[in-house]
Image: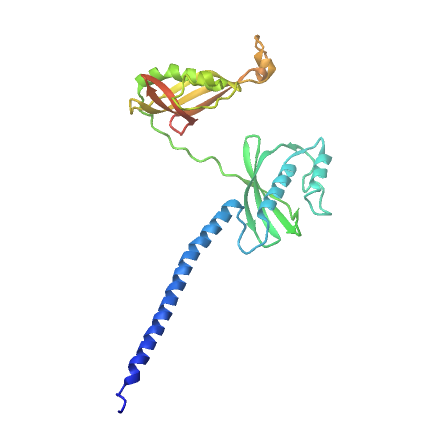
Length: 303
């Protein structure tokens, strides 16, 4: 019997269909694998970035070490006294290149005292060079020092003269409207909070339990401070049984053994210091009496 016309067409067609299906499923699997792997890789990179200081991409320049080196240099460079110039020159040896002026540009006159040195920023030029900016304070002035550094084989040197730069001034702080106040609740809370802050300063847990809510433990200062004044209590209107309260207190801070003498010393430095502080407390009413549930630093709610 003669074969039917087109008998092999069906078999070949099924082969092509199955081949196409295999290729399609392979593409789907590749897409799914890449789709799952990419977020996981980004997550892992994000975790690593949170653990280590960010280094500029494409360079091997050690940012963290350069920041430490420049901060130490600034602490030497910005402190000088004409009565002892050799001390500064000796300390600068660890930072300046060989053969450079031993005072790094200082003419040997006058005096300067600076502190509060902090790494502020860095511009990496290549794998060997960068400009590190360090912030500092001298008297009532904040400033910046730009330090050009050179790195090679694990060592640093200040590559050229540094540059003093002005630091930005304080941000403009907008005024807040006077808060709404519940004067009745404030009067009710004041004696309770005064007792709480006295116990809080002393750190006596037996006394503190008289002022904190059931099940709450608050660590105190163990006598480091004493309460000089409960200056203000701000209670906004709200839930009759739970409020967030702002309390302004003045801590008396002992200046040493002389401050404990009954007769006050004529030296102001020997008298206890007073530090005004603001706290935010969550208070709850239990059995008709207010108790402290939580204490932390205040938000900006009182002027």
